[in-house]
Length: 315
Ligand code: XMP
Image 1 (cartoon, rainbow, N blue to C red):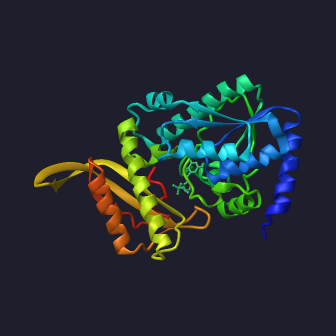
Image 2: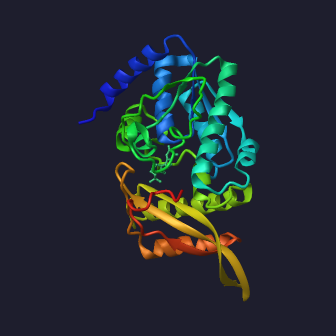
Image 3: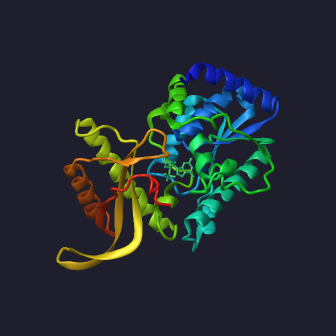
């Protein structure tokens, strides 16, 4: 059975041994994997570790401010890099899911390399966990999708990787998070390529704004339903926006809008998942809010597919 405390001690020592007196950087997204990894590595490296939060423009509502607050609270050495334009420029015209993932992974690394040079870092600490590696085709396994922590890495990288969480599954990461008092321990997982893989079709600032708002509404209503005792907190709950349009009617006028899909799933390790049996009134409230509050969306669907055959994210 997994025990958090011996794991933490063992990994602090392993990071110390690997990095020695060298300097390292870590990319933090605010998610449990990267924050646990940062908290753990900072115990080993102190001020020789710099945490970097890249504002890609693809994050959820209020996320950049929340992450800044968490980093300030941890008391780590950190820097916020505004790279929104760079990411949107690189993604212009791209609709293929694997291309999006590769481009975002590559951009991330290039931004880090730039920041690392200024800091003198030779090491890149990453919160890669076991399912990322399993599905990214490591160790001869078949590629399902390139998780940006793994498959998105360019072949020629100037930094040595430090991955203390790579043998852990999500629940184990959460156990470590609780032990380290990391605030994001109960946050739902969020993909490295962020809202880009929930925005089917082209990733533009306008399309991302739609997905961001739809995800916010789903999160808000699920939390309300959990607080009201209508359902348990699911593993993941979010929205996807599709580029296809359908006909609808608003204020007696014909509209031709986009579709939002609600995705709410149960899982223990993200390798398999089942769709959640959400009360109909909760789904209906989400649908009403999305279509009333969001101009471009006139249809909402609920995804009842399990994994496999579907994956949790749509891309
Ligand atoms: P899929 O969509 O493959 O997702 O069923 C499994 C879990 O991983 C999350 N996910 C990612 N996490 N980098 C990550 O760190 C990624 O590139 C990535 N893509 C998907 C997804 O949200 C789910 O929890």
